[in-house]
Image: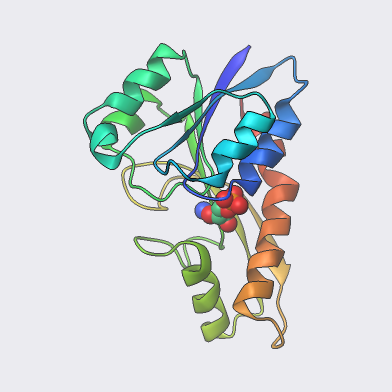
Amino acid sequence: MTRLAILASGSGSNAEKIMEHFQNSDKAAIALVASNKTDAFVLERAKKFGVPTYTFTRKEMDAGKLLEKLQAEKIDWVILAGFLLKIPAELIRAFPERMINIHPALLPNYGGKGMYGHHVHEAVKAAGDTQTGITIHLVNEHYDEGKVIFQAATPLTPEDTPESIAQKVHTLEHRYFAEVIDSLI
Ligand code: GRF
């Protein structure tokens, strides 16, 4: 049974869809949900699915505590789903081509440091783009620059707001993320 860990810093709507997808899988299990925020709602969602949780600080992560935990839990793949801290190189090297992230835009556009959540959707709106989308990519040592595995787009109209853009993006994420993970592992 392949063991997956989800890292998230916020609400965790993607994490919930992934836990739902693998709940009765005979191929893989969500073995851990970990967060750098002790009040992240994703931890509540994990409890609902009976998935063990783990919280840590940036300092602990940089000191190797998270890697220790992932290795102790015999984790095979690490899924970043709304995780906002930069992953230390040592941790990326411990999961070669086995750490993936979802980004709420069509990379290489609107990626990089500081480009997350509403900042992305506001930039897409300000640019007057006629479409946006999601990118699922491998994690390497540069923000949002890892090999792209999957992209999906959705059309935008001038009436769209950063909030409606965010909703359209979430719809795509919830539609595809779990399936893409399942096709990869
Ligand atoms: C998602 O839009 C994801 O693309 C981005 O952060 C957001 C997390 O949303 N990296 P949620 O916590 O899964 O609801």
